[in-house]
Image (cartoon, one colour):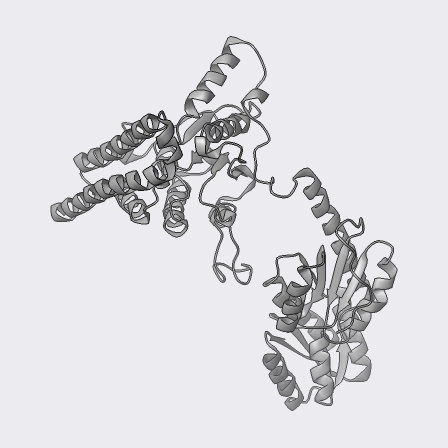
Length: 486
């Protein structure tokens, strides 16, 4: 392992870039990095795969790094395991043609081995120039070694590929042509610099720890007209509850401003949260996300969930918070159809089961009840004006007993089932509302006593278990009666 430069401390204005390579790409990195010495502090690391990951994680404990430049399977391995940005060098079409031209001067039997997938467009090139060209792909080093041995057995004399492939080809006694050009590596350095400038600019706009905090509060709503005064009173009223809020208004009227004011006002009213920052506020512009990708963006996805999904999966906007409380603001959600809204309800169910009741289920009800459906034709007609769902951590999901949350999900699922009798739906919702009211009355009375206020945590746990037991028995009875009626 070689290092040419020492990384600066955090107060340096120059970006810090680390280049990671194992084979001959290391030499190309070293030559090109001299051109960017005046723009960034560049540290070459000659390690690969798990050894590189271990070394980089240890190094990050004491040093700063803004971006990493790597290539091929080694770069993909680093990208899936490191939290800092990894710029992957990808050979351009010109690189491939240039390498094939070099190989064509030496022999007519050429093989090209690329990472993960082959290059379909080379088939036309092969037919046009009458080349004996074989394409192969690899994932692991052992896989690459096997592909090289097969090519040699098939009479291939020259192999085009990245550093690992060229090293294996030379070990097998074949001619090796390096696929990366200086221009491609130079472009990777430019991309890394552009990315670090953008990231550092965002850090200035959103300082550490404040990226998910609100920027506005109730005092930022200006104006002395009766309508603005009524708006402030309405916000103050809604901020007393954790219930979800349906915000209507044309584009640009300040729906997110009202949501942030409710968020700030609610948490500032909590005695146990005085002098503490508010929990995260996540604003999601659904209009900028396609309907097919909405669930993946909000709730993340697992590895292999769809073609092109990131190796190892990715956390979503909501699930990636890693917190047990907070508010989410959905703008433009009314643009999606009923099927998408129901899918989001199911995703919220799964989220509550995993995170432990972090977000509110009233969001689902508020979404569905404003859509015209055969089962709910007696409810409101669809809203014509743009609308926004601001769903929040709920009274019921605030209970500390995880079983209570699961019982609540059962009740909610029963009420949405088309096969459930109407009386069962009404009883379920009556039980939810009654429990919420009892809970709020209890807290309001309890906080009026100084001694009780000091013992808030203990009282909350006891009350949670009592109410959880009541809801649990009610849910079991509902489920039992629902199954027997069927």
